[in-house]
Length: 134
Picture 1 (spheres, rainbow, N blue to C red):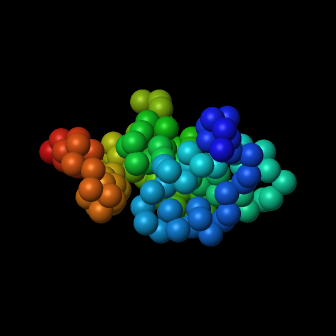
Picture 2 (cartoon, helix red, strand yellow; picture 1 turned 30 degrees about the vertical axis):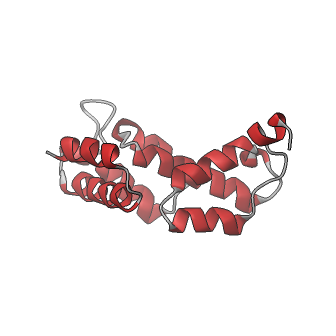
């Protein structure tokens, strides 16, 4: 296998591989695989949707709460609503207050992220998430 094939695989990943990674909590790895193969440009609508959802999951794992309202478009309505409730508004007078109105959804999300980080045995990320929680 040449270096170029290692860095930029030509073959699109199998959706079963992506599902297995996501079920094990490796959303960011699935997202990397899909981005490397440019799955968002695929003719397969399932791959395009998987690429969009794993991109959201990667941002959620990073606790990028300022953009939760913007990045949730590919998600089903109930998950998009939960994500918006956990985020921060972009404008001070925004009617949707998100975490500024109620911190419970944000803390629930951070606890889910903490659980994933602990399951993945990432001590540094566990400490970072606990610091944010505290």
